Image (cartoon, rainbow, N blue to C red; front, side, top):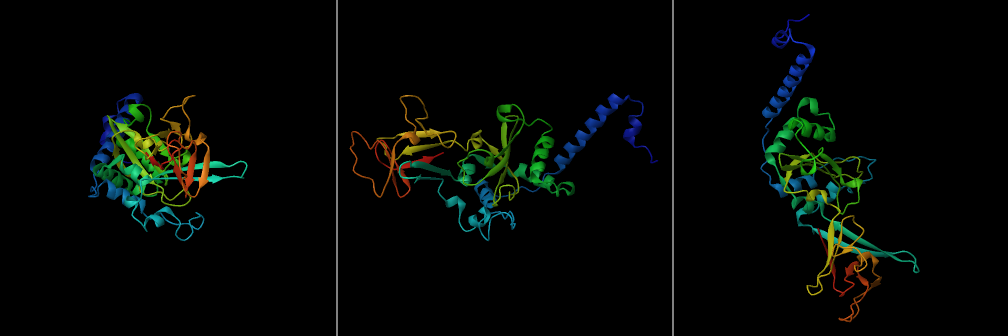
Length: 307
């Protein structure tokens, strides 16, 4: 039997309950000391540079992930500048038999721009996380588990969910209808009024794998959670009609519903080669689709998408 430690000698005459409390406090102290020591070297990259790095990060290949030779997001992104890509895309397609056609409104938000407009890279906090992630005991632990453990341990249970209430929120945008062109996986949490996002970008093919190294960002507000929200607006300043969605498929006129409002998807539609002449007083009364672009049912001008 080994020699008793100073801690064991100090606690020898204490009852079990008191000893248990002291042991728990000692363990918390050790964990806090570890986090204080793990400062890491902060990256010099700014928010846009870090996000660009994440969107081209090699997240691996697998013969079973349906990505083919070069079909994974990270491979496609390496052939372009995601920062220079359009922030939004709005298309439309008519499908179905002649006597029962339907319109498929196709709104897309760039995941890169969505993040760049809502997040700020926290190089110091990220350096702490990366140093902790690189500890020998953590190197073989899945990132998703590490992310949850770090948030809970680093902030000693003080991390909350939205508006300082509840638990930190684990989000994978694949699990709900989303307008983003790539899947994001992150933990949103707040600590003493500051909102953080521990973010991964899905760069692979199969959504069950192929996620980037997690990175720590701060957020000014909760807009990172609203990847189902967007507006379709007429480019004609005189008309200025708009429709808003918060579920990706119902488009409410001026963000409202009711008998005096008409959802965009409820309008008649017609696929044409060019927009016909329109009576300025009456308007077209239908959505014209020209080469995949949508035109306003009230004035006939082109519609565009905004977050």
